[in-house]
Length: 108
Image 1 (spheres, rainbow, N blue to C red):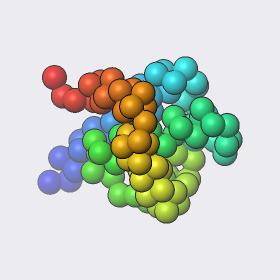
Image 2: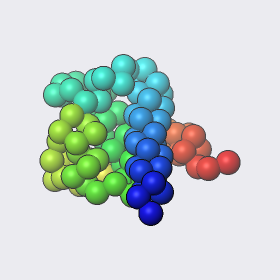
Image 3: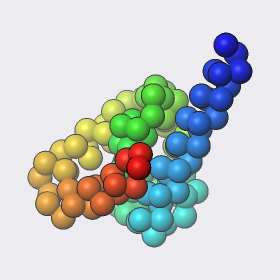
Image 4: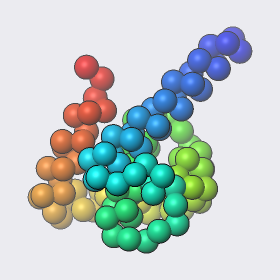
């Protein structure tokens, strides 16, 4: 019913917040930067990683994910997810970092 729908929405919201906070902490940047327009490399990477995990661990649409990251469009989200996937394939250090982070999102 309607109440269940509201509860699911809230849980999903917590998910995005949790992912953003966890990724921001891991990359040692403020969460707010994930939503800003900055193109600094470390922020861009953190933002892309956070979008990647949001896509992986929530049921949000690409449009909704973009909205949570400062109103970016769905194409940006697709690009971010693809970029992270490519880096996982080509960069062992990055792959290990993603593995570390992923552990934080796997339900215990």
